[in-house]
Length: 125
Image (cartoon, rainbow, N blue to C red):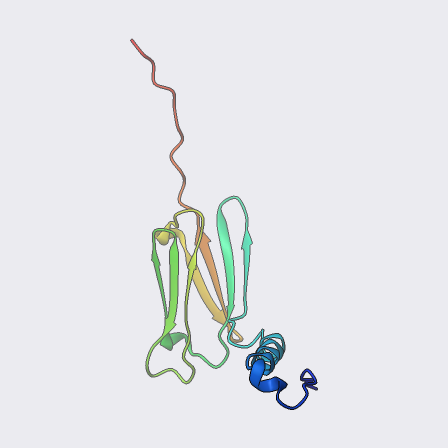
């Protein structure tokens, strides 16, 4: 239920934004979860596991692009449901060692971490 602040006659003209703010706050709190794609990210020493909810999408209509530390997922125009998302990870991804599987409306991506170069001390002569 929505409750607007009680205003006397003529008071609304002096405070035009009061009702708008209350409605905006109500809608934001109520529908906060809508529009967000459901996903879960887990990490271990060698990779990240990214699970993304994409119900109703066939694997033929999904494309996963990896460049550097960015992962982009989108559906083709023929897909029954359109989805587009991008995720930035803190480390570059080894594209050749990545795996993707779509099962029961969940896209599972195992994104292998690219080994970081180890620093070494240089001897001064």
